[in-house]
Length: 92
Image (cartoon, rainbow, N blue to C red):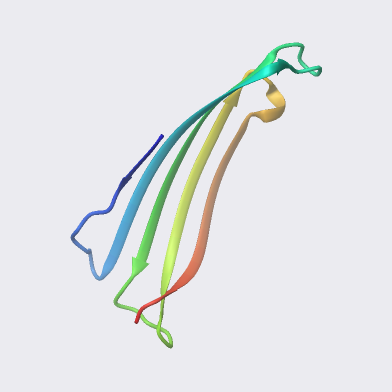
């Protein structure tokens, strides 16, 4: 399940998009490692920021910040992550 929001108003020429998603998973088969069925719950948060007022040869920079967390009854699949990426998009 994903929910996204993109404010119509730009702040200092930067447009933003925010999204949050939740997920769950349950295996049908018993895992030989834990002798139980795997059950996961995940949460992802993401923010995308595009500098529309900056252009390099027709491309604008985009900063993406993403946080994710997965809880599982199997410790092998538990995780936490925080990522930041820089991309470029066309600004024609």
